[in-house]
Length: 80
Image 1 (cartoon, helix red, strand yellow):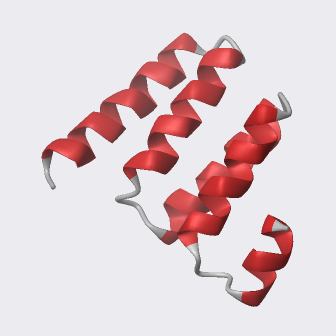
Image 2: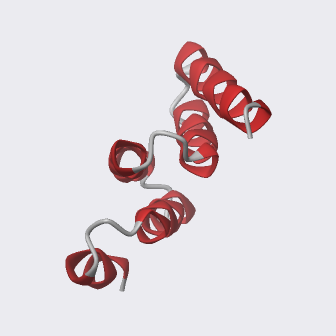
Image 3: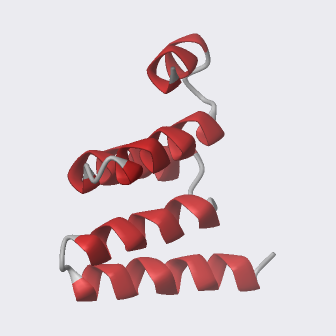
């Protein structure tokens, strides 16, 4: 469903973020990260994408990467 949504509206950041969340729920963390990266490319100020990306990195055991993404999400959230 999300793949179809992004084909119809490739600039729709929410569709990418939700697609990543669906992959995360299926424990496809690497795939979720790739989708969150696309969401961030479209909207570099997407705190949700950075936060979810951090959670996926955490699941993969990348503690340093997760901390960096959480820090970016906090930084963006504070600047709003």
